[in-house]
Length: 441
Image 1 (cartoon, rainbow, N blue to C red):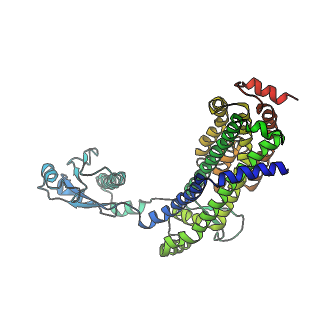
Image 2 (tube, rainbow, N blue to C red; image 1 turned 180 degrees about the vertical axis):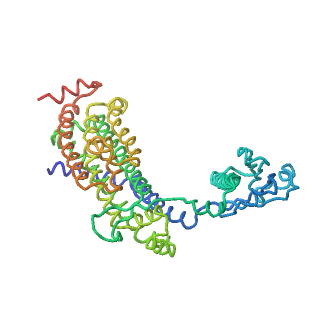
């Protein structure tokens, strides 16, 4: 254990002193903090400027244009009946004066496609949706009026119901008025799961490749040949894996402290009074549930601390699992080019995990997602994408147990390859050779 400790210390200190480690450790949380602050700033100050649209209405009495309602997205200006399209294009061709010119055909009631939007600026989907929805409602009312239904306007106003969002709550099984239930947000959970999953992917790839490159470099310079005279190949492999794992763990801890600190202090400062207003709106039930989900989760220190703790457990387990394979491959080859064929096989489960992670939002408890969160080759990434959705604790526990048991099994297999591979030079091994090394006594 003393020899493993010396190797761990060497691998750890060698990497944490590098400028690349310091820069990455500082810049990554700044990027994460920016992602946390951005939603709050967008909710408070975001949104595009109001677009000014000139309306040329050729319908009788301009009845369509007169019913268009201006708002935050679009401001309508109805031009006179004598104004032609050509005159409007010539007079209002400056983007600073008019975003565009809306031309309504005289037969639009019977031909809803007789509608044009002549733009002076880049197109905007929100503007087009606003115009389409308003004119659609006007035409619907006009067509219904042909049936001579008494008090049609009041009936339509009463029947015009729009469900813009749904408030989601986590059932805690308590018989109360619902005030103790936790607010949730599917979109927020998916976004946080995606960020955590990609972060884990980054750690596995970057630090796993460091293990591979470190073993190859020392094998090329014959340093390993000297080191194995003082310690067992297994001790050497474990020292390298654990040393680099500590570097990854240290980086995650630093990131966690910075992000949680930002959540506790920076977010409330940025949100200011608006944050208080949102909290009051949450109590009265007048705020969009998605806004509630974003604010409540990004400012919940306990929630973020729990996520980072689980992330740390999966990073350690997942990294140790994959690093043992990288160490075995590094010992079996002489150059990074020779390692390419084996590296591609290791990367395949990681790529599958990324693909499955993208589907977690649709159903975090589907059969494919569940089993991929249990299989150790994909579980670190997929499970981190599922955790923000509030899955049962037993699933996380079982997944971690399987992952760490698999690590010990993979370490034993990798050690069998490592003890032979470190002495092999000048030959590119095949899969058959690796199998023979595992069986070799």
